[in-house]
Picture 1: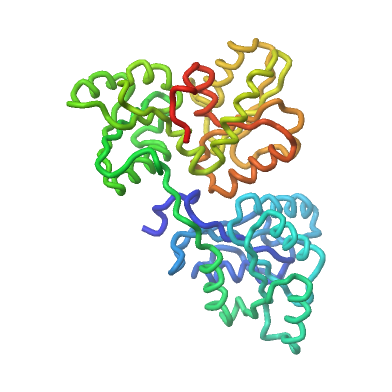
Picture 2 (picture 1 turned 45 degrees about the horizontal axis):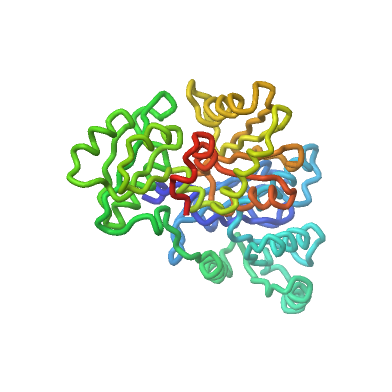
Length: 394
């Protein structure tokens, strides 16, 4: 049961600090398992390591162990860079000190402040510090955070650390279908089951939306685009809401009863995970696209490309049909996302069902700061098929 919730829906707790600060020992202490290798050798943790657990009072969380901030090994600079990228998806940061605070630790705390990430400052191996009160005063003066004294190995102070995690990790509950339907509404889910759909199961947005509708007391009805007409004909009155896969927008719109509201899974997740108003504004960049423009398509997941993949096949095909075959399109997946977005005229992001909200907002903010328009699969597919003004986005 513990592992049943998608990592993207968990509160992301990242632990930062220098080599041998006790980060891996703390991860093992919090998870109750030997998740991270513990060693006195600097640079033992080479990549971020994560473990999904439940914390009483907070629920599902993802604990992330990061490489040391002062890693001076041959690949140290790349490891430190990966540590910094973890901040893109961090909901709560734990900065673990060994004693007096160092510049690299101050830099992480300042970056968290800039990004509005809640921070817990803790002093590791506190049982070996002679004048801990004086050290705490100094650190609090430098960081504006009162540090916790903990011993990851012995377990001292871990209860107080967990209390702080629970307090800072609380967030307002968000609903995927908020404002789109209410208890008792019939919601038709139109879900293509083509070669790009995983065999034997539904994709994550469909699963999450379906479960939420059941929890909210709605009446979900599922069909494929091919069976949509027959499904609607079997109903006495039209469904209050129709949610479709973005790739079927056009054919679904043609069959949509006038009384039904139409939206897509991708648009719902753009609201749930990102900034739908910015995505709708970003699609206006299409007015400025020329055959010489450059577009970035960013997918949250990594998978083997399929014949009719939306991001890698259908979107590029639609864009080049509209603007010309010379149009330059770059495609990235998973954690890959360029630091410099200034070379692009438009960024098109997927629904990001595999990312937490913090990660999506970090990507949006990077584009916004660099003055680059950004939109979403569902929004741009509705725009390219000429029905954006006929579907509900907010």
